[in-house]
Image 1 (cartoon, helix red, strand yellow):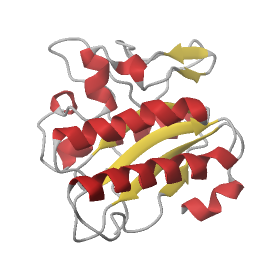
Image 2 (spheres, rainbow, N blue to C red; image 1 turned 180 degrees about the vertical axis):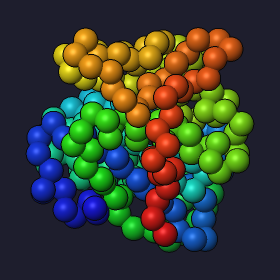
Image 3 (tube, rainbow, N blue to C red; image 1 turned 120 degrees about the horizontal axis):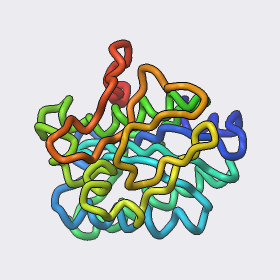
Image 4 (cartoon, rainbow, N blue to C red; image 1 turned 30 degrees about the vertical axis):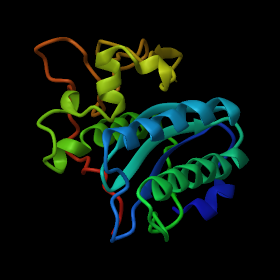
Length: 209
């Protein structure tokens, strides 16, 4: 679903946002670039009442799982972030032209299982693309921030079935009413796999070509 169809979303919808680069240029060339983009997320999420539950900044694209209080704010939020970042990037590297292949894409996540599965998959993106051996070792994602103790700077708590998954939750989520089967929640225990109950049917989430 493209950003132009955001009008079909409802207020307080959760969605998976993807922004892709043009074929000629990567989105991030240095650590400073990643930090600048993360600062934009922190700055504008409050202005537009956006809750961010997870993200992963890859060299070629960006994943964000978020919830927008007012659906009309979603397009403006992403437009400002992408425009400000593109201006910063083009100025820094003395380049001209488009940085993004197209407008951002948004996919509705209406069920809690989809939200949790999407969080797992976006944080596993560096492993799928073989640029990190574990989500814990990739510094430009929400998984790494949880472990570093910096999650509250960007991430919000996620309420599921009346329970709250905090940004630095360190145990597998179990509902009082039922176990959420085939979904996962980050586990921060040292020496353990960061994710448990990996859903077999869930394919890696990559931006469509």
